[in-house]
Image 1 (cartoon, rainbow, N blue to C red):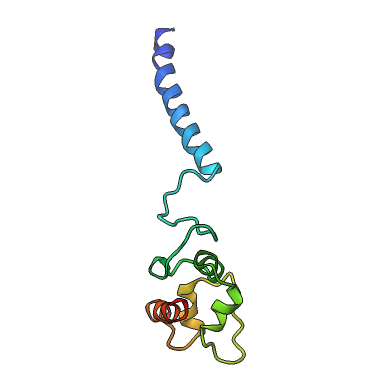
Image 2: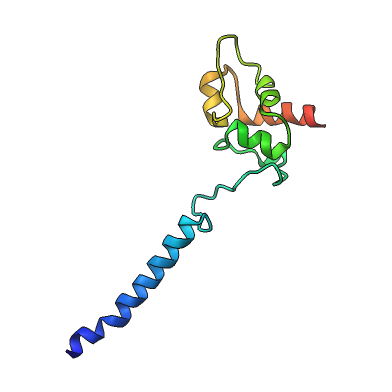
Length: 111
């Protein structure tokens, strides 16, 4: 009997830790990717744009319509770019596209 009682505290500790991590991840409070939540009220600057962000996230953070942001890409005719496209994926769709150069275009547009 005493051997089984020895395992109660370690098992309970592991259950509490695993439960805490599981609940916080399920509620979006535990983030390990380094990515930030981008919303229209977040006040993202041009320098905050990252390659993993979608065009919609960038537009929301910058406070501009996503259609206007897509128009600044200077995509060739026939290339359909969706708001859910990540900035890093645009390099394959738009010839000569670079996130750093696009930041400069946005700086000129936003002042």
